[in-house]
Image (cartoon, rainbow, N blue to C red; front, side, top):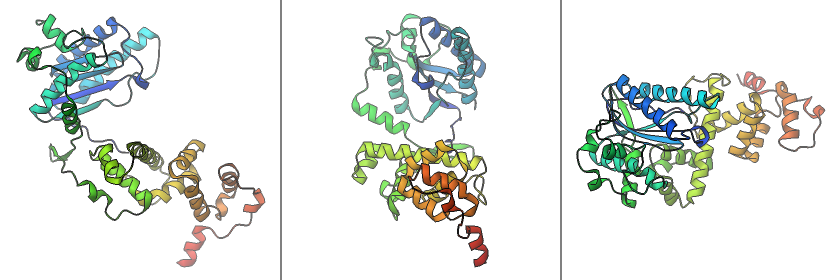
Length: 356
């Protein structure tokens, strides 16, 4: 699956990053103080404003206002500096953070207000403090207890008495925040504009079979529709929709991996997975990938679909007789011998030459 374009334009951005495998990476107050020191340094280097932050045990939240196109540079520096400190302290090696950081562009003041309350409520939600402003590693604490601290200059939090408006989010507020976060943008020239969302029923017009339906479910989800909305429209359970989306994501990851290794022939280097590429993916995976990828294909498409592709495209191809014997015995539980694949029919290449 291709990475979505990160919005780097100057403005307000909500940033989150977690420890690898969701493990705790801030083990004590000293660790959190070190992260704040790096945050202060990164803010000065990249000339941005930090309006809100919250450092929990295994992740952090930031609300930053950038003035240049340098959001990624800022976060990479911040994360790398803390990773160097933590790995040295714990005598460990390897990545500390769980993949790319997540960021959302904050497009209006309503979103901004909800987001400030959401970030500052995090310690209360996980029972690290009784109320907003009590948790030492959040911006509201600094506003209340260290208003002259050089660590944070937050004009947004200083505008009003925080107790007048930093109160818990209602269920409606949480739904509003989710809608803001799911808003999609597309780049036009040098700016990002809100992407016009296709009506949900339109994703399922002229859908052919379960494979086509599942691809449409994934497309709707990636365009911002909630799993619950998709499930309700298709009369499926949310759990079923969640599993379909996970399976479709795995298919795209495997497809992209095979594509990037150059195992597809006569296709553009930026080809993307779609419902009509399912047979291509299965056939190529069976021919050229390792056992783990073959198992992934079987888990994603089912043994009957994979065996059908094998019978149609590989079984009678003399170039793959050893592979066919292996697949037949190991994956399809067929009682065959190697000699059963010795006298094979014409290959697909032979057939194409005859047709030409």
